[in-house]
Image (cartoon, rainbow, N blue to C red):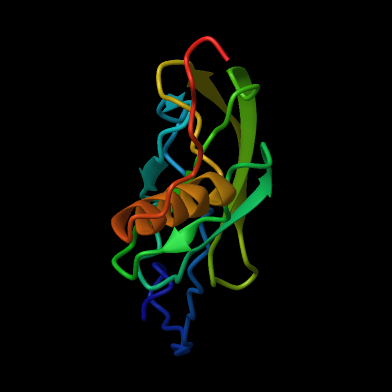
Length: 152
C-alpha cells in the first residue's frame, strides 16, 4: 500500500461482523370487520414481519367478553371469533398484540374498532334446545302434554 509520497505502508486485515437488527412485526389492520348479534363472528388476521425467520404470536389483550382468544391456523393466519349477544351492539374496542421471536422480541399492539350490529337473532340457550329435543322425543312416542278446552 502506498502512502502517496513514495513510501509504503503495511496492510492490516480485519473482519467485520454485521448483526442484523430485529424489526417489529405488524398487524396490518386499522379496524376489524363488523360483527352481527347472534351470528358466529370470524375474522382472519395475517400479521407480517420484515424478518421472515421470526415466528409470530398473536394475543388478545382486551376486548368484549364474547371475543375468544385468537387461534393459530398454522399457516401464518389467526382466527378471532365469538358470538355477540343482544346488548353487545355498538362500537367496541379489541386490543391485539403481535410479538415476534427475534432478539430482543419486538411487538406491535393496537386497539382496533369493532362494530356489533343488530340483524341476527340471539343464540338460543342450551336449555331451550334440550327442551325442544325432549318435546320432540315425547311426541314421537305419543305422550300427551296437556289438553286445552275452548271456553274453559
